Length: 214
Image (cartoon, rainbow, N blue to C red; front, side, top):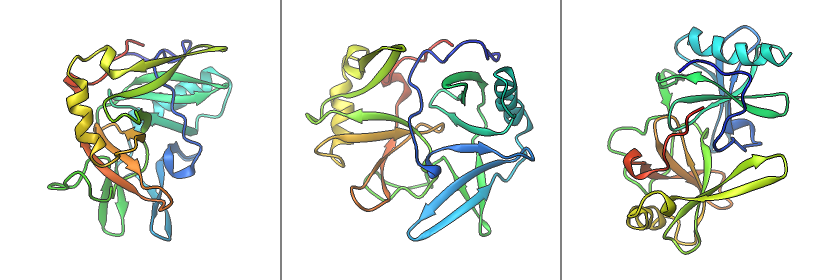
């Protein structure tokens, strides 16, 4: 897909206000994430340059009269979303999973091999927010239609058997609540009052919301 800096993104906009909930291109053209583990807060640089991704973000920023560095997200379809001029813009598609240097190890959007749902999520806390319904049988989000209107989108409106899939998620969030999904389609949810996240598994994309067409 090609970049479309003149058109706002037509699906869910990232909503995180936390520093650790977003990626950033630095002024010198590197990709960075803020990672919090327990009481430790670390600013980590990507293991590889990701020049194409940096150019995507910079292109959108420049098109809206801003410096080429700044915040971006990658959603579950690999769509690069850039905040600029008070809106969210589609910058292109990027399929390479970001990895970050972590004290000789690797921090990645992919779950470690063998990590079962219900365990602590050890990866970056960057993801696109959805909500597990309090009933435990649906997932929904609120999509902005225009500056005055939001519309609720429910997974059950698109996928007939979504409740059976969602019930698996709700085992670890029985009262419902926030769900985040990242570019590797890994899902995680905040543990109330703990500042950490529980891993919910990997979303089956054939039983998820349909991919939007930017």
